[in-house]
Image 1 (cartoon, helix red, strand yellow):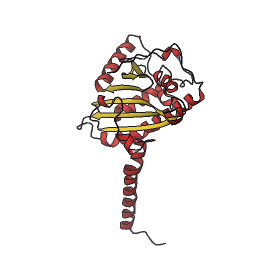
Image 2 (cartoon, one colour):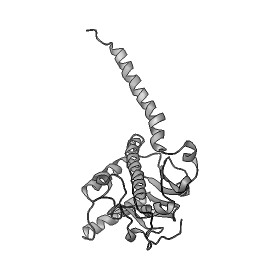
Image 3 (spheres, one colour):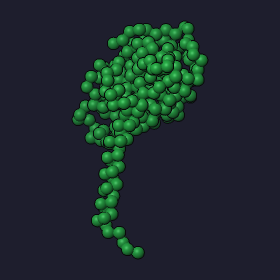
Image 4 (spheres, rainbow, N blue to C red):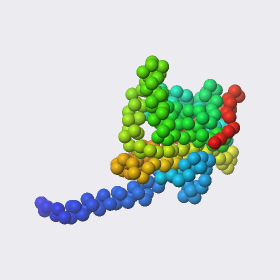
Length: 259
């Protein structure tokens, strides 16, 4: 049996690696960063863009829902850990399961409120425009302050520790995300033909150029995981809205302010 020349083998491996890299950069990366939207839609301004005016990276995704914005909005308002959930892969980001109902007790949301991602913190609400836009924000200083406050509460027995699954997720994010960052996360609702809704999700992040040396390599990998969670979340919202009765909780209260 003839031996395959080592030089040809190296060229073959290099060719496969190069093709994989090009496919990831020019095909897969644009796809998961703009799932459900056209290039023009990815570039157009949306509510909350002003919070991170010059991001290092951004992702815009959308999905069509067969229901009006008024029917979608309550599902956005009640999101969060310890609230209605995230409608995604619950074993990763929840303790329990995401609800399949509108919860009147979690329909009150205002600018400055917390949209929890775990028992010790989460995103801060920055924009509320009922039936149009919900935008939340986080940065390194907020994360640090929340962590310190949470540790103080734990030591005093005033808070319950995070579940094991969220500890694992938090450790992964802490090891891969930039040390200095600021991020906005927007959920925008636009009327669609036929009485439906286009749900647009946009994530924008700014981080220091001189961060951890491995950040430029780990962020794309983490980005794939984030995309999988976000895609599941948007599909989860769509499924819940379309299967739920076309009604909105009558005792919901949402403040119409933004910053």
